[in-house]
Length: 113
Length: 108
Image 1 (cartoon, chains in turn red, blue):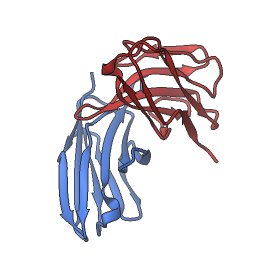
Image 2 (image 1 turned 90 degrees about the vertical axis):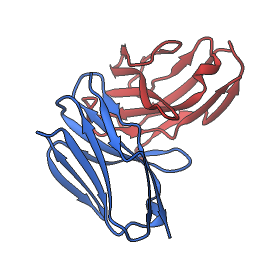
Image 3 (image 1 turned 120 degrees about the vertical axis):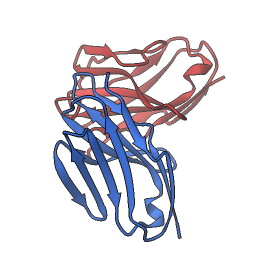
Image 4 (image 1 turned 90 degrees about the horizontal axis):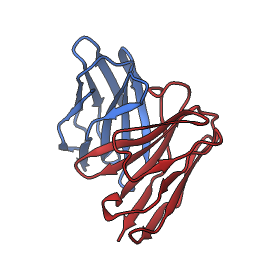
């Protein structure tokens, strides 16, 4: 089954404790992206990747890191999480260009205390 | 920078009503997406449009490239259509720009 998976689905952590949210897709998609969704603000892009070893900042990259060592995986790293990073996070992928149909992961609800 | 505006922000209707959600964007694009997000959070793609009109079941999406405007219509609405509907436009190298979403509630 074609899908995008994210782990964990729910996470409660404390300020400053490094964490990684994994994202994996099995569709051989070139483009992958991370979004955060906050009430009243909608979905905003954090980082994106056009292919292996190619990543770039989106609209709200501060406090986040990503890597793309393999085509299928695109982890999101929070080196020192802060309460303002409490949010619902989505990973998505698409074939080729970024404005093609995007397939979303199920979301990760992160709470930073 | 592309900006995407959706209206209405909230919509409550009775079962069976015809629903229209509007989306306007500010710069030329390559594709316009309509997404659906149910309570519980998952996002699914409903339509991707670059021109004209698409239909899937009771859902119809239209786009007017000259006016930079798209609409999502739901015919014979049903309570299971209750969800957040999100418009997103794309045309650049960085991905999609999203509207803030329309919260739709269909009452039985």
